[in-house]
Amino acid sequence: MTEVNKKSAVSWLIEWAKPYKEKYVLSVIFAVAGVFCGIAPYYAITKIIIGLLQSNRLMSYYFFWIGTCAVLWILRYIFHGISTSLSHKSTFAVISGVRKRLTKKLVKLPMGYLLDTPSGTIKNIIVEKVDSIEPTLAHILPEMTANILGPICIIIYLFAVDWRMALISLLTLPLGLFCYMGMMKDYEVKFKHYVDSNKHLNATAVEYINGIEVIKAFNQSASSYKKFSDAAREAANSAINWMKGTQVYFSAAMSVFPAVLVGVLPFGSYLFMKDSLSAETFILTIILSLGIMTPLITAMSYSDDLGKIRTVVNDITAVMSLDDLIRPEKTVQIFGYNIEIKNLSFAYKDNMVLRNINLSVPGNSVTALVGPSGSGKSTIAKLVASLWDVPEGKIIIGKTDIRHIPLEQLNSMIAYVSQDNYLFNDTVRNNIRMGNMSATDAEVEAAAKRSGCHEFIMGLENGYDTIAGGAGGHLSGGERQRIAIARAMLKNAPIVILDEATAYTDPENEAVIQSAVSRLVQGKTLLVIAHRLSTITDSDKIVVINKGTVEAEGTHDELLNSCILYRHMWEAHVEAKDSGEVSA
Image 1 (cartoon, rainbow, N blue to C red):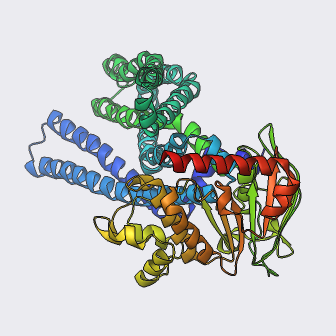
Image 2 (cartoon, rainbow, N blue to C red):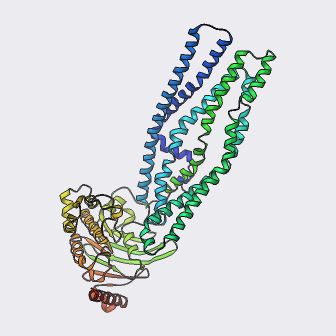
Image 3 (cartoon, helix red, strand yellow):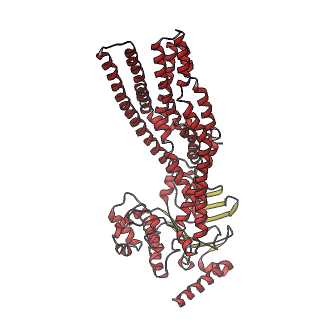
């Protein structure tokens, strides 16, 4: 277990709130002042009643205590407002900090976690779960503290006045606490089931929305909708069962706690008739005892949030406790941009994908990886780009193991273009600018021209200011690829990895993209994974990957003569290309 997991939920909350400690302290102070201002009028009312019983006819006496009540009630809401403002400003800053910490963490995690975890689950943690710490920090910390401290002070005062009446005013407290304990029994287990079912619902909803095209195309709406509806029903049932288990105890507690007069009135009347209790003390006890339970009930209203917070914080910190890609912070000197892969093995969970790969990618050259689908080509590219860590073996760039290169430095050295190029729901211009955030509009457009996408961009509704849509949904696959290549051009990294970057390109635009790629990689180290073998025939070296191993390497002509698998792949490619031309 890591040090992160050993910390309690309270420890995490204290750590997150520490930068705003002074504001939280002030919030508690004002909350306590507000509660006292809410309780103090009970004492003023006692004085008014006693004055009436003693036939006090001085109007100034009553105006004083009535005015005191009014001022105290006004101050109560002023202090409460100040406390709430301080706690909420601090809490929203804490929430923002936790979200930033989570998003930074995601950047440092291996791709395996992101691929294995549904995006709905990650979204739920970053958005809903982090939001769930708001009641604890913004309300429970100041308000629950104040609403518990206020009644304690009243009880102490009552003990000072008459210990017998103080004790009897607490008669309902043990029974109320017993009901409260019943309500909290297995609370965390029930809430965790509720959380887990909602995670599943989130993941199912995202899957349903993302796969709606496939669902419609293959007429699978009934089965897919059933999966979603079952998840929604389970989430609803978990909430209902959770509420059922607490409702009876909660209702009993809310009935018992305020019933302080059940003991105070008969017992106090008995003592008064025995001349053992003065009328003033009796009245004071009656009124102040009513003021004890209201703040306690308010404090109890936060029991749901207290029951949830451990599960919520555990979900958040479970992500924070994941092992990062281990990289140093200090920049290192790189001697050239040749890539050496030595004894590299890699498995996705229990599925061994690469077995003892040894491969050399010379600097300022073009090296292509080819092979059957699932042979491990893309995995090699992702490992070189440090999207996963290297568990066994080495990947060396310019004499330096990539595990000894800071991620930021390594990312600046490599431009990675995959077949599934993600575009943000932003303008085309800003999507290209992701390659170099300091680039001017002129530099963005120059990169677009070099990548061969300027013409189609200018044909869009708003040119470079056209919104690409979620994940680039307003553009075709080929257009997204060309924009991704423009983005890589703008980055101007010394190492370029093209992972089937022309996979979605139609034959008419293939020449345009190939021309763009040739300009992109001039003077750079290029590692390309080929979708169409015709695009890599001029490569300096072609490496055939089969079943996670290097089967052969050489030039196109050499492999045609020496590698049966490559020759079969080439023949199949030529045949497919010819049949495509005929059908066209």
